[in-house]
Image (cartoon, rainbow, N blue to C red; front, side, top):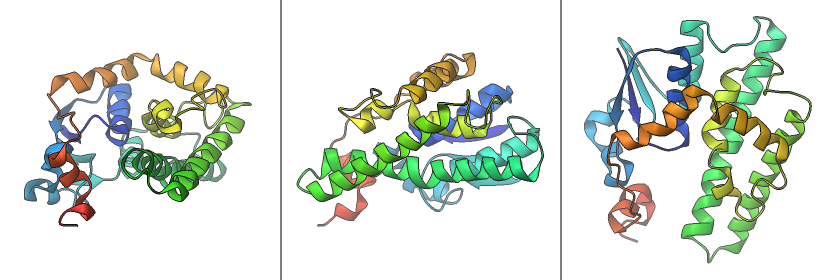
Length: 225
């Protein structure tokens, strides 16, 4: 059975959504990052980058959410566009846009606004970039039901993991500037598989406090500073 090393945060949610959509049997292995479980030797043997998600499928071990989505899509033949070079190129372009833009800029925007408010330059830069990226998505979805048109793919599954927490990332603008993304998000979030993913967080008592212990595990660059 597939083992999904999971924490209730955006990137693991993507993989869980695929597994639920494809109705693949899987086991959740909780990794409580605020307790530092991602740094345990047993987890580092699976993902040396010490982040969730990771996935074990018999003799296959993987980390990085978009890599896992590609693996699962190709393994099952599900949630891929038509098999033409043009369609695959489009899929890969948007997957990488999410992986290199939406995820990192969301994380940095949240980090600097909440944990380094004394750095207005960084706050302004990352806030600008995340709004710029969502503007690109909004323009894209103005003429398409899903990221690649009329077909629901792993590009949508990947984006959903982050878009569901966008109001927290965006702050004051919220969804006001990005109504097409909100329309798209509401449709995906209403899917039964997405509802089941949102319920996963209740299956394990993850630490929610951002106290000194949590910061020591999540912001290791500050330890001993």
